[in-house]
Image (tube, rainbow, N blue to C red; front, side, top):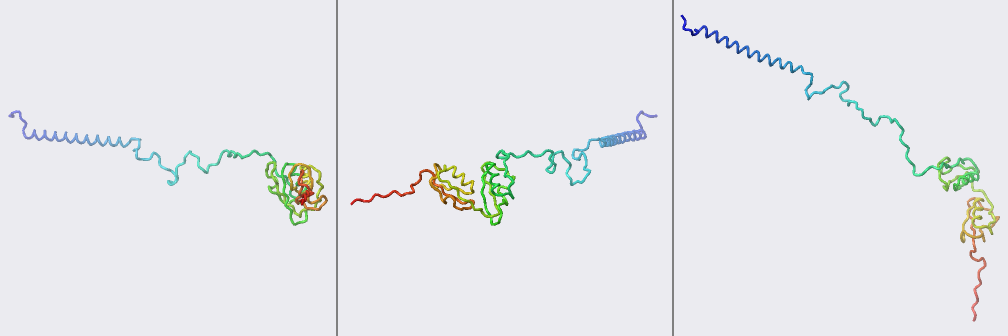
Length: 225
């Protein structure tokens, strides 16, 4: 008969059953953890410290950007710079190769001054100018003309009795230049060289305009004893 308590054999079976349950629990825990790790490793989002896309070209080449570079061609022409003065359209006429007297007339028609520099050749042609032909200029600018040959001979005109301004114009027309001995107003009372004297282009002629000093010295009164 038994008294209702399990014997040694019963205790041994119960122990094996308890141990088996414990081992099964441990295995389930391990398997569950492994499954969770596998599922976690299949996430599509990469870690934050990894690049989103790898470079496909030369790793030393910088990726292209939308910003323009200094080598990019301009799509429009740059705006012209403003000038200090408005162009009048006046230019030095083409006078190289022409007679210097003709060239002087062309400059005078354009309200330009002139300066003649004669050379040692044989002709009367202009060899060069400054400013150059075609250069933009303003009214009143003096243009220098270089002439191939020497200054030609001219005759000094008679200026006595003429208005001082008119006399100066006559001298310039003849290729000579006035020098004012007594002022620039009134009639011409004297000139040097005299009328009819031979001179050369650019030679000066002195003229006395207005009352000026008397040509006859005033006698000094004698002392009385």
